Length: 542
Image (cartoon, rainbow, N blue to C red; front, side, top):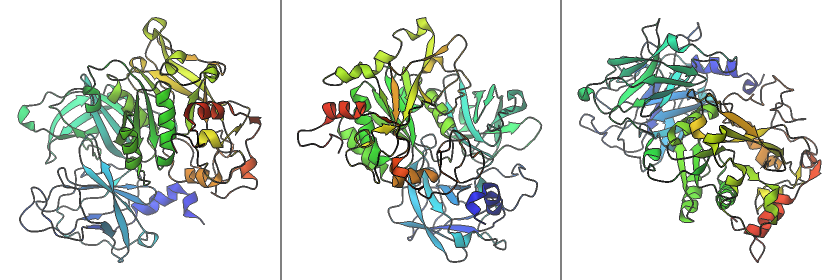
């Protein structure tokens, strides 16, 4: 039996395991606010088994070891632990590792800072030999013992707007079954640093993983940084929470607040994992046709995304990143993007880095210009009440290739399927419904707004979806989308989200490089070669 085929069983094994994970800092140092003397490690237990499934935790507050600042850790269902270091903790300058009771060690990788809380994070994979059941160990210094936070029920992020607080939580609404708990059955709970409840406000919207509630009326002495959680009205216990609430700053997300005086922009928002080598082509092209700003939600990249971003910044592109380590939360991340940039962006394209907006009308242009994207958008959206433009996708195949094309995906993949089964959207942010509901690339709109679908003669999205096998195989690993079927599970085998002819194993099918080739389409390849090709032959992004 292969465990990776059975995620429910896999997670049951995880939550029935008890371990000690020690973050060995390989040196001595003093923690800010800690007692005197050096601290050399932290210990966090994995949770005991809960035989009655989804009981709420009695102690949702962070683990504290004596007087040391708090640390938190979340267990994701793919045998990975996300560790959040205390606020103000300096980034360690030496390599870290996670030590398990059976003396197995795995690397603890620095993975960025959570924007809303400013907390440094680490990722620590749990080695296979450390996943078996162990007897409960003693937890040195922990009083009372606290459990590793489980991803199946967790408030993980929040953002303040001028009017309210938006809270993101896993495990309350059942998106797969289309069931949302009524807002009237929930309330927001605001907690001080020591766990004391200091305020409640009613939840006013409850859809998918997004919840909204009014700001609390707080005394200034309550502190600058609080936690916000959710609570069922009929249950006295709050859900475990990592979400920070800063009541002293009622306003847009900092990235939006900085841009209040800037003119409206056309922006693009995407969520990525290990796609750094694709990014320069994608940004260079879309910037040239009129995308002003790029917001990259990083879902745990391990391929030096930072270097790719820095290069783009040096070239003058407006690119920002948001650490979004939460597993399979693409819809929630896009809701966050709308809320965070509503004041600074006019239109937002929600497209992936293997997708390129293209209009056949541009083929005659000798060079790109920054009015091109706006040419496919309504000039007066508020008058026309067009809040979303839906663009059909063309899915390109491997086009005979066995490895990533050096000069870029638009140059290397030129053969596509005939059918157009998907659409991607460019959204007028002020038209998005208050609940922020979306289906990955399409948003619900407020009353009176409508979606306009454009034909392929006006605009298409070239989706370089089925690439050379080594590239496509990586999609089997922790896909970012929230509710797309995991290809490794033998369920919904006829789903349109699945790849035709591909089973549940990341094994290359015979003749993969010749698949999905029904139409030879070189229009964008030729256009980009004209716009971005150099005299010697390479493209500007090489």
